[in-house]
Image 1 (cartoon, rainbow, N blue to C red):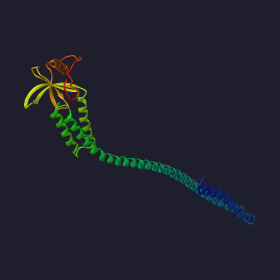
Image 2: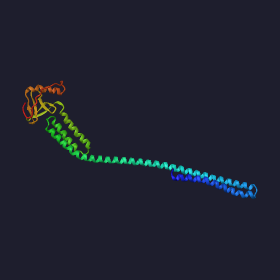
Image 3: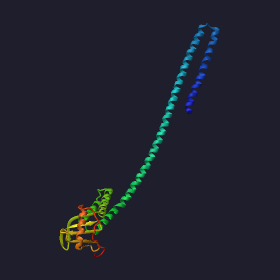
Image 4: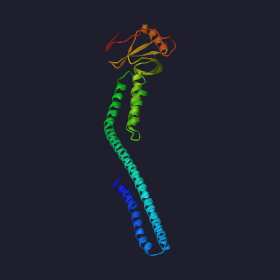
Length: 269
């Protein structure tokens, strides 16, 4: 118990122990001479007066006791409130420390993101340039469409209204499209510019391994030579195999093992 509460209780006990005996002694001292020299009524009045004084004193004692209990209850209430406030303060301090640690972590992430942004933008431009060179030097299929797509990609990478994440996603999508060409077989009809003459032919692409074309009458076929960057005519015996491969590529025939002419690097069959 706190020293303040203990002092209040000790004061109350001392009042109870000392006040009542003092009143009784005073009462007896006043009654004694009256009994000796006066009639019986006078001592009775003195006793009654003394009793009334004792009752008033007792009421005062009770009031002091009540006030003491009230002070004690108020002290206990304040003590409990103080303990609650201390606990709440400690909780707020822990929460503040956690928030400060979180803020510091976020600041570090922001700083790292800025560094990454400064590094990734030049990297993306370099990747776009490399993709453009790859498309230009690759087999000449869908050439105009693919080059146009890369040029549009480079324009988007320079657009400040697009976030870095969006620009990086566009770059990855372009790479995925180009990668997909290496795993597919495709046949289509398109224009061919050769020997100053423009004609319509049937194209056949086998991944990125080979690119052929065949005339619409199936009488003439050619193969793209990567080293010479030109078309090389094929023997007429290859026409049938190429025509069958085109039907497989268009899902017009069941897949089968086909024998197609494939030129080695730099030369004839």
